[in-house]
Image 1 (cartoon, rainbow, N blue to C red):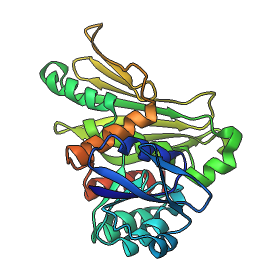
Image 2 (cartoon, rainbow, N blue to C red; image 1 turned 180 degrees about the horizontal axis):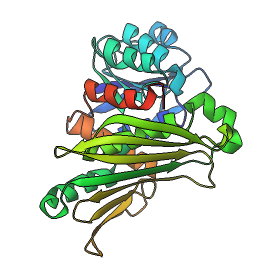
Image 3 (cartoon, one colour; image 1 turned 60 degrees about the vertical axis):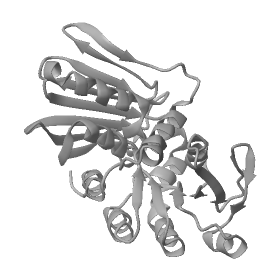
Image 4 (cartoon, one colour; image 1 turned 180 degrees about the vertical axis):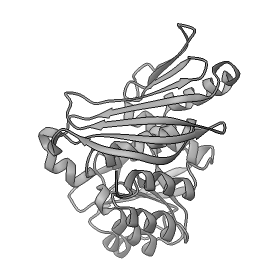
Length: 312
């Protein structure tokens, strides 16, 4: 039985715990959060400590896995402490690994050079993306190579801007990594050719252009992110040389493939599993149950360099 500690018992940490209930040989032994929070796992109350030091002083967890789900700006410090206290554990840290490139390098390269470190690219391994990968792989001869990609992400965060900035930085840092990780499943993003802010800083709207590679060819990707919206929306559209199109709605966990003017494949769900939970269940199924590598350290660093390098 693999023992898990979750550090950060907010929205993300709670979803991690819920998703891990589906992994049969895993148990959560403790949580860590600086606020007074509660944590349950398979209907059992799990002890929550205010610091990793307190946890070590009062418990003997010897975790196999440490989940880090604290606000993005804290990831480097928390990962460093986790690496110091739990040197034999595998660390999985919420995406993005950090909001600064040097911090991402510390987590992925420095700490990751001593023990396994994985970034939780939950959207890249969500059910609709796995479906899209399988369907387009089976239709590759008919579809041809991808020729253009467009990604859109919006959240209604402007009304609580200060809190969202403290947790996530801005819409590009928070959602851009999702877009890049999904694109990575279908084409290789290799260069960010532009990044510009649209409108006022409070709206947190960004447009990025990315050069990708697939089948020995280059293709453009456009990523738009925003915190100026009434409701959340996330989707990815991939066009192929045949004129076919793959559309994935990440919030609806639904998608379709259109070819020759007709829909030739569709995907959806019955809605019984919430969107975020469905994403994380798929992530843990891939990583822990199927024992597939999420992304290599080199791939993680390339995605974070595209996300965080300075300049436009």
